[in-house]
Amino acid sequence: MSESSDDEVTACGDRSEVETLIMEATFRALKDHGYAELTVAHIADEFEKSKSLLYYHYDSKDDLIAGFLRFAGDHFLAMLDEAERDTTGPLDRLRAYVDIYLAAEVDEEMADAQRLMIDLRAQAVSEPRFREEFTRIDAHIRERLASAVADGLADGTIDEDVDPDAAGAWLLSTLTGTMLQRHTADSDVVTPVRAMLHGRIDEFTAGSDA
Amino acid sequence: MSESSDDEVTACGDRSEVETLIMEATFRALKDHGYAELTVAHIADEFEKSKSLLYYHYDSKDDLIAGFLRFAGDHFLAMLDEAERDTTGPLDRLRAYVDIYLAAEVDEEMADAQRLMIDLRAQAVSEPRFREEFTRIDAHIRERLASAVADGLADGTIDEDVDPDAAGAWLLSTLTGTMLQRHTADSDVVTPVRAMLHGRIDEFTAGSDA
Image (tube, rainbow over all chains, first blue to last red; front, side, top):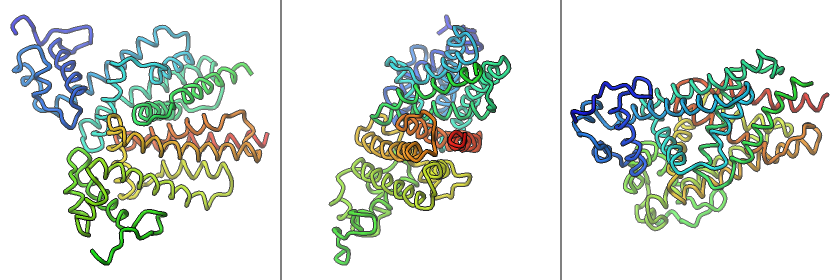
């Protein structure tokens, strides 16, 4: 226990190494038990360091889950940052976001993460702290989408009369709904919706060529 | 108990009066307890007739919930039928669907029903029987949306090159995602998304005028 300082700053910004390990333990425990069956003891079982550290940082199951949502949200935003780095312009950024949400193939870890977020999202109906985290994550992603549209308008790649904020809201709703259906129903909606969205983004370019 | 025949056919098609009462009891019990805490005893408590009738019809909690999803899905499709009756053409049908999903104001009973469907939808991640019901409901609604688009293409109200099935999938994803966010986050996404969708539907008409 003495070799790990819980004020240590890692690559994940100002999150300590211990907090990161706790969040990874929470992810594994949530994956195995689901929110309803989850107990703090399950998380402690997955945590390799002293249990007292876990109880020192978090008071309850919902405290851990709220922390996990913040962690997972930041992780997802970092993924979007990463994806943005390889893009060549605003429309390409929009395409990258679509492809992250609606990848043709998702590996098991990503599928687990998406399924788990659906479970926690349903809890946000009645749990204000989870709701607060989803409000924050949604707002961040909507802003990214809106700013890609705004940049497209500014540099002339988009010459339609489109409101960036409304377009961001509409896009995030579509992505969220498609991902939800992917994991809760058996029809393939990912393929047609991804194609529709790419088509819509291409129309933005077509507009500016006209 | 003798005054109710459980083969009686009501206005709801071939669903018996007893089944309808059981489903209404399931709705009330789900509303009070949520899926995770729900027991068959909770449903029995809400059921006014003999408990033995309930056990005669359904074997388990998940059997009741699968039945409830079928019931709720049929109820929602009947609502769409009702809404269609007052419409004046394919685009107006699309607008009616948007307004049912994304009503500016939802009364408490509808809000409860939507919140409860989010809870059950999250269970469909791991429960194949629920998944089957959501697959069925989604497919029906996508077909309605697709057929409105197809009718618009057939009668010339839509003269864009749009694939009805893909448009139906895209619309349902948007509506589903917006409704999910309405109940699980605090930002108002309903207003901008409804406006975007109405604008998009108006563009279909604009296209045919051009």
